[in-house]
Length: 310
Image (cartoon, rainbow, N blue to C red; front, side, top):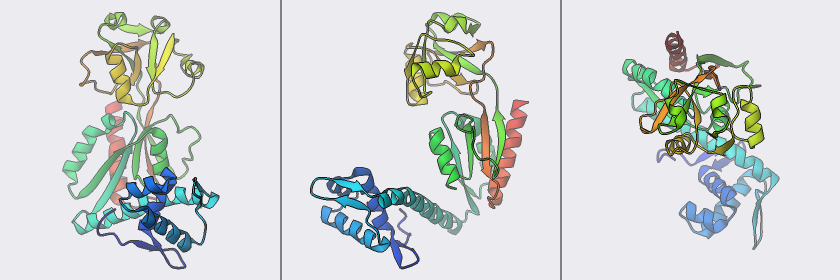
């Protein structure tokens, strides 16, 4: 937290000490006073005193605790969710006013998912050159976390795939298509299919697929059934590990055609026949956002992306 930040917020009946809130979050995550105290660089006695002080401030019991265990109460579980939002919003506000003090007219927070930094980087450079007074922060999250932070108002604009947009409440959001081209197959250069002009669904039926898509083999097979079949899957938890596995010739992967594979010389990108669109990509912005720079960035980026698609 910023050294310029004050340590309390009004809670209607007094003040809420943010140091106590931070200690609460650490204890809620560790459920162990010794570990939480070590994390916050204080004694166990000080940690206990801060938790008791917070419970007194709130007028509720946050933990059940005895000599053997520490457990969140129902009130504690709810406060844990809200406390994270509180600190995020508070620290974002502190950064905003400090940016203004330092001469930045506005701050702009942009979020991207797994691949979308490569959809944004060229335009971002152009925008920064034209708007040196705007303080821009770019953050990358998993798609679920990206939408969560956008909903909480912690991100002004996000560029995301449509993976979790089905059923998403869009009435208060401007959502524009950014990219909808077919995806491509990635293979190790030594793989027999790497010499093909295009890879077909028949070619893949005896191959191992490396994917970040969550689910059982049967669930993943059902998801891709209309496009192709495969022999087995290896599930990984990040884009970089997917590339690393393909680079080691442990299977094939699917990627958007816009990604660049500069780090991995052993990977070849191949057309898929027939063309297959796994996911489309969208830019989202809250309609009620009054920051003029946010609206300008969003509209200019959508226009840029449309020109690139055409």
